[in-house]
Length: 174
Ligand SMILES: [Mg+2]
Ligand SMILES: [Zn+2]
Image 1 (cartoon, rainbow, N blue to C red):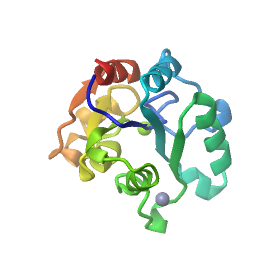
Image 2: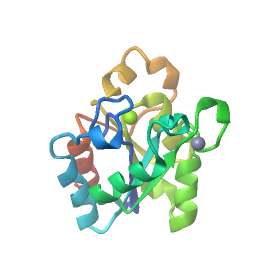
Image 3: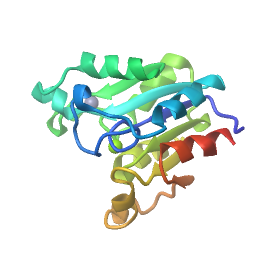
Image 4: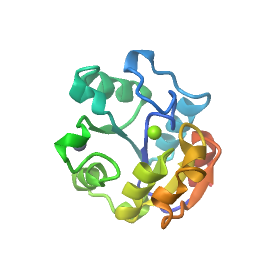
């Protein structure tokens, strides 16, 4: 197994849903995703959710609803950006604020953390900025990120491209 401390996982398009906003009460996980989350924990790694949810700023869902959902899935903690573009916050991916906050809270070396996400120009850029290990999944926006949107993050190479969250986790644990 690789010398990893923690795994950060995006929500929409990575563990389930559609890649677009889905209210927590309507959200469903991809096949095997729950088992993959469990496997990360079973080997003693921390597993964190990190997600942009700007619809919170439009009162279409609450921070608490997301927190509860991530707790139910067994995440050790969740880092959620509730802001819109207009807020100019430091947490909305591709900004690395959520990763930096987690590193401070849990004393992590981000170069020994993995980020799994489906969007090149948010998830992969945020991970790259802090020197984390990057896995792009082909679910959600993964394939479009590798094709028509590749120019938006062309200077960055994922460490691994996985078919889905399950293959990503197998790669981490092998
Ligand atoms: Mg996503
Ligand atoms: Zn934010």
